[in-house]
Image (cartoon, rainbow, N blue to C red; front, side):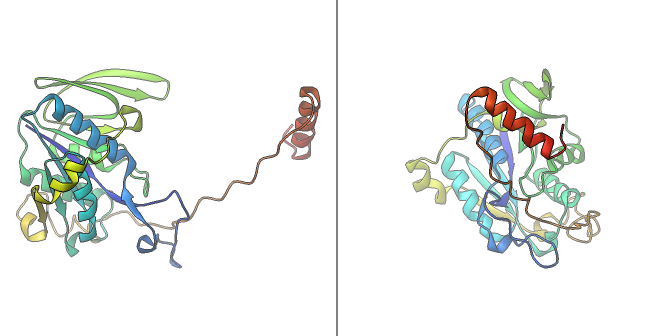
Length: 267
Protein backbone atom coordinates (compact mmCIF):
# COMPACT_ATOMS: atom_id res chain seq x y z
CA UNK A 1 0.00 0.00 0.00
CA UNK A 2 1.34 3.43 -0.97
CA UNK A 3 0.22 6.93 -0.14
CA UNK A 4 1.61 9.07 -2.95
CA UNK A 5 1.80 12.82 -2.33
CA UNK A 6 2.29 15.33 -5.15
CA UNK A 7 4.07 18.47 -3.95
CA UNK A 8 5.39 21.62 -5.57
CA UNK A 9 8.14 24.05 -4.65
CA UNK A 10 6.76 27.57 -5.12
CA UNK A 11 7.98 31.16 -4.66
CA UNK A 12 7.17 32.63 -1.27
CA UNK A 13 4.45 35.12 -2.18
CA UNK A 14 4.01 36.38 1.40
CA UNK A 15 6.48 39.15 0.58
CA UNK A 16 6.93 41.25 -2.54
CA UNK A 17 6.37 39.35 -5.78
CA UNK A 18 9.21 39.99 -8.25
CA UNK A 19 8.09 40.42 -11.85
CA UNK A 20 10.36 40.62 -14.90
CA UNK A 21 10.06 43.31 -17.56
CA UNK A 22 8.27 40.85 -19.85
CA UNK A 23 5.51 40.35 -17.26
CA UNK A 24 6.57 36.88 -16.07
CA UNK A 25 7.38 36.02 -12.45
CA UNK A 26 11.07 36.22 -11.50
CA UNK A 27 11.27 33.03 -9.46
CA UNK A 28 15.05 33.13 -9.06
CA UNK A 29 14.91 36.31 -6.95
CA UNK A 30 12.30 34.96 -4.51
CA UNK A 31 12.64 32.48 -1.67
CA UNK A 32 11.28 29.00 -2.43
CA UNK A 33 8.96 27.14 -0.06
CA UNK A 34 6.82 24.02 -0.10
CA UNK A 35 3.34 24.90 -1.33
CA UNK A 36 1.20 25.28 1.84
CA UNK A 37 -1.74 23.12 0.71
CA UNK A 38 0.73 20.41 -0.29
CA UNK A 39 2.01 20.28 3.29
CA UNK A 40 -1.55 19.47 4.38
CA UNK A 41 -1.56 16.69 1.78
CA UNK A 42 1.70 15.33 3.21
CA UNK A 43 0.24 15.37 6.71
CA UNK A 44 -2.88 13.55 5.47
CA UNK A 45 -0.69 10.80 4.01
CA UNK A 46 1.43 10.55 7.15
CA UNK A 47 -1.67 10.39 9.36
CA UNK A 48 -3.00 7.43 7.37
CA UNK A 49 0.47 5.88 7.43
CA UNK A 50 0.46 6.10 11.24
CA UNK A 51 -2.82 4.15 11.17
CA UNK A 52 -1.49 1.64 8.62
CA UNK A 53 2.17 0.95 9.50
CA UNK A 54 2.55 -1.40 6.53
CA UNK A 55 1.99 1.49 4.11
CA UNK A 56 4.67 3.68 2.54
CA UNK A 57 4.42 7.44 2.05
CA UNK A 58 5.99 8.46 -1.25
CA UNK A 59 6.42 12.14 -2.06
CA UNK A 60 6.79 13.18 -5.69
CA UNK A 61 7.57 16.56 -7.23
CA UNK A 62 8.38 18.02 -10.64
CA UNK A 63 10.96 20.76 -10.79
CA UNK A 64 14.63 21.70 -11.09
CA UNK A 65 17.37 19.92 -9.09
CA UNK A 66 17.25 22.42 -6.16
CA UNK A 67 13.81 20.99 -5.28
CA UNK A 68 15.75 18.10 -3.72
CA UNK A 69 16.14 20.18 -0.55
CA UNK A 70 12.37 20.45 -0.17
CA UNK A 71 11.97 16.70 -0.68
CA UNK A 72 14.60 15.98 1.98
CA UNK A 73 12.60 18.09 4.44
CA UNK A 74 9.49 16.04 3.68
CA UNK A 75 11.48 12.85 4.24
CA UNK A 76 12.51 14.30 7.61
CA UNK A 77 8.80 14.84 8.39
CA UNK A 78 8.23 11.09 8.01
CA UNK A 79 7.83 10.25 4.33
CA UNK A 80 9.56 7.02 3.29
CA UNK A 81 10.64 7.79 -0.27
CA UNK A 82 11.08 10.81 -2.54
CA UNK A 83 10.92 11.09 -6.31
CA UNK A 84 11.96 14.17 -8.30
CA UNK A 85 10.80 14.51 -11.89
CA UNK A 86 13.37 16.73 -13.56
CA UNK A 87 14.51 17.31 -17.12
CA UNK A 88 14.96 20.11 -19.63
CA UNK A 89 12.25 18.52 -21.77
CA UNK A 90 9.73 19.20 -19.00
CA UNK A 91 10.55 22.92 -18.65
CA UNK A 92 7.81 25.46 -19.34
CA UNK A 93 4.96 23.03 -18.70
CA UNK A 94 1.55 24.48 -17.87
CA UNK A 95 -1.06 22.62 -15.81
CA UNK A 96 -2.03 20.36 -18.73
CA UNK A 97 1.54 19.28 -19.47
CA UNK A 98 2.49 19.09 -15.79
CA UNK A 99 -0.39 16.75 -14.99
CA UNK A 100 0.54 14.67 -18.04
CA UNK A 101 4.12 14.23 -16.78
CA UNK A 102 3.21 13.57 -13.13
CA UNK A 103 0.53 11.06 -14.14
CA UNK A 104 3.12 9.26 -16.28
CA UNK A 105 5.55 9.19 -13.35
CA UNK A 106 2.89 7.74 -11.02
CA UNK A 107 2.05 5.10 -13.62
CA UNK A 108 5.78 4.37 -13.84
CA UNK A 109 5.90 3.83 -10.06
CA UNK A 110 2.83 1.60 -10.26
CA UNK A 111 -0.56 1.82 -8.54
CA UNK A 112 -1.92 -0.95 -6.33
CA UNK A 113 -5.57 -1.45 -5.41
CA UNK A 114 -5.27 0.26 -1.99
CA UNK A 115 -3.06 3.18 -3.07
CA UNK A 116 -4.16 6.78 -2.55
CA UNK A 117 -2.79 9.88 -4.29
CA UNK A 118 -2.86 13.14 -2.31
CA UNK A 119 -2.49 16.64 -3.73
CA UNK A 120 -2.85 20.09 -2.26
CA UNK A 121 -5.95 21.98 -3.35
CA UNK A 122 -3.92 24.48 -5.38
CA UNK A 123 -0.50 26.13 -5.63
CA UNK A 124 -0.06 29.71 -4.44
CA UNK A 125 1.90 30.72 -7.56
CA UNK A 126 -0.88 29.86 -10.01
CA UNK A 127 -4.06 29.29 -7.96
CA UNK A 128 -5.55 27.13 -10.71
CA UNK A 129 -6.44 23.98 -8.68
CA UNK A 130 -6.21 22.05 -11.96
CA UNK A 131 -3.23 19.69 -11.68
CA UNK A 132 -4.67 17.26 -9.11
CA UNK A 133 -7.98 16.67 -10.91
CA UNK A 134 -6.20 16.40 -14.26
CA UNK A 135 -3.87 13.71 -12.86
CA UNK A 136 -6.91 11.72 -11.72
CA UNK A 137 -8.57 12.02 -15.13
CA UNK A 138 -5.45 10.94 -17.00
CA UNK A 139 -4.99 7.92 -14.74
CA UNK A 140 -8.69 7.05 -14.89
CA UNK A 141 -9.11 7.38 -11.11
CA UNK A 142 -12.04 8.63 -9.03
CA UNK A 143 -11.31 11.89 -7.25
CA UNK A 144 -12.61 13.94 -4.33
CA UNK A 145 -11.54 17.57 -4.01
CA UNK A 146 -11.48 20.00 -1.05
CA UNK A 147 -11.10 17.28 1.57
CA UNK A 148 -11.53 18.48 5.17
CA UNK A 149 -11.61 15.01 6.78
CA UNK A 150 -10.44 11.60 5.56
CA UNK A 151 -11.10 8.16 7.05
CA UNK A 152 -9.97 4.86 5.56
CA UNK A 153 -11.45 1.41 6.06
CA UNK A 154 -10.08 -1.25 3.74
CA UNK A 155 -10.47 -0.04 0.17
CA UNK A 156 -13.04 2.62 1.11
CA UNK A 157 -12.29 6.24 1.96
CA UNK A 158 -14.93 8.41 3.61
CA UNK A 159 -14.17 12.04 2.79
CA UNK A 160 -15.81 15.21 4.05
CA UNK A 161 -15.77 17.58 1.08
CA UNK A 162 -16.08 21.25 1.93
CA UNK A 163 -18.55 23.42 0.03
CA UNK A 164 -19.14 27.16 0.12
CA UNK A 165 -22.21 26.75 2.31
CA UNK A 166 -21.58 23.43 4.06
CA UNK A 167 -20.08 20.05 3.31
CA UNK A 168 -20.90 16.67 1.81
CA UNK A 169 -19.73 13.20 2.87
CA UNK A 170 -18.46 11.06 0.00
CA UNK A 171 -17.29 7.45 -0.07
CA UNK A 172 -14.78 6.49 -2.74
CA UNK A 173 -12.92 3.27 -3.50
CA UNK A 174 -9.16 3.06 -3.89
CA UNK A 175 -7.08 3.66 -5.87
CA UNK A 176 -8.22 7.28 -5.93
CA UNK A 177 -7.00 10.87 -5.74
CA UNK A 178 -7.80 13.37 -2.97
CA UNK A 179 -7.04 17.10 -2.93
CA UNK A 180 -6.55 18.62 0.52
CA UNK A 181 -7.30 22.00 2.09
CA UNK A 182 -5.74 23.72 5.10
CA UNK A 183 -8.75 22.93 7.32
CA UNK A 184 -7.92 19.22 7.04
CA UNK A 185 -5.04 19.20 9.52
CA UNK A 186 -1.98 20.94 10.96
CA UNK A 187 1.25 19.73 9.30
CA UNK A 188 3.77 18.21 11.66
CA UNK A 189 7.34 19.42 12.08
CA UNK A 190 10.49 17.60 11.09
CA UNK A 191 11.93 15.52 13.91
CA UNK A 192 15.59 15.33 14.96
CA UNK A 193 15.55 11.61 14.17
CA UNK A 194 13.98 12.33 10.78
CA UNK A 195 16.60 14.96 9.94
CA UNK A 196 19.41 12.54 10.79
CA UNK A 197 17.88 9.74 8.73
CA UNK A 198 16.47 11.61 5.70
CA UNK A 199 19.68 11.26 3.66
CA UNK A 200 19.52 7.47 4.01
CA UNK A 201 15.97 7.19 2.69
CA UNK A 202 15.32 6.26 -0.95
CA UNK A 203 15.56 9.22 -3.30
CA UNK A 204 15.55 9.05 -7.08
CA UNK A 205 15.28 11.30 -10.09
CA UNK A 206 13.06 10.47 -13.06
CA UNK A 207 14.18 12.30 -16.21
CA UNK A 208 12.83 12.21 -19.74
CA UNK A 209 14.81 9.07 -20.55
CA UNK A 210 13.18 7.25 -17.62
CA UNK A 211 9.64 8.24 -18.64
CA UNK A 212 9.77 8.47 -22.44
CA UNK A 213 8.26 5.00 -22.91
CA UNK A 214 5.19 5.79 -20.80
CA UNK A 215 2.04 6.16 -22.98
CA UNK A 216 1.30 9.64 -21.57
CA UNK A 217 4.69 11.03 -22.58
CA UNK A 218 4.63 12.53 -26.06
CA UNK A 219 6.86 15.41 -27.28
CA UNK A 220 3.80 17.45 -28.25
CA UNK A 221 2.05 17.06 -24.86
CA UNK A 222 4.88 17.99 -22.48
CA UNK A 223 7.05 21.00 -21.83
CA UNK A 224 6.49 24.38 -23.42
CA UNK A 225 5.54 22.81 -26.76
CA UNK A 226 2.76 20.79 -25.16
CA UNK A 227 1.37 23.66 -23.07
CA UNK A 228 -1.73 25.32 -24.54
CA UNK A 229 -1.76 28.02 -21.83
CA UNK A 230 -0.08 31.38 -22.51
CA UNK A 231 0.64 33.63 -19.51
CA UNK A 232 -0.33 37.17 -20.42
CA UNK A 233 1.01 38.94 -17.35
CA UNK A 234 2.10 38.41 -13.74
CA UNK A 235 1.84 41.23 -11.20
CA UNK A 236 1.86 41.95 -7.48
CA UNK A 237 -1.58 42.63 -5.98
CA UNK A 238 -1.98 46.32 -5.02
CA UNK A 239 -1.10 47.12 -1.42
CA UNK A 240 -4.13 48.02 0.67
CA UNK A 241 -4.12 51.47 2.21
CA UNK A 242 -4.00 52.12 5.94
CA UNK A 243 -7.26 51.95 7.86
CA UNK A 244 -8.90 54.88 9.61
CA UNK A 245 -9.65 54.82 13.34
CA UNK A 246 -12.95 56.47 14.22
CA UNK A 247 -12.76 58.10 17.65
CA UNK A 248 -15.38 59.42 20.03
CA UNK A 249 -18.65 57.96 21.26
CA UNK A 250 -20.49 55.29 19.23
CA UNK A 251 -22.91 57.94 17.95
CA UNK A 252 -20.04 60.21 16.88
CA UNK A 253 -18.19 57.30 15.23
CA UNK A 254 -21.31 56.38 13.22
CA UNK A 255 -21.67 60.00 12.12
CA UNK A 256 -18.02 60.03 10.97
CA UNK A 257 -18.55 56.76 9.08
CA UNK A 258 -21.61 58.05 7.25
CA UNK A 259 -19.82 61.28 6.38
CA UNK A 260 -16.88 59.32 4.92
CA UNK A 261 -19.19 57.08 2.88
CA UNK A 262 -21.10 60.08 1.54
CA UNK A 263 -17.81 61.72 0.54
CA UNK A 264 -16.90 58.60 -1.46
CA UNK A 265 -20.41 58.61 -3.01
CA UNK A 266 -21.02 55.14 -1.57
CA UNK A 267 -24.35 56.09 0.02
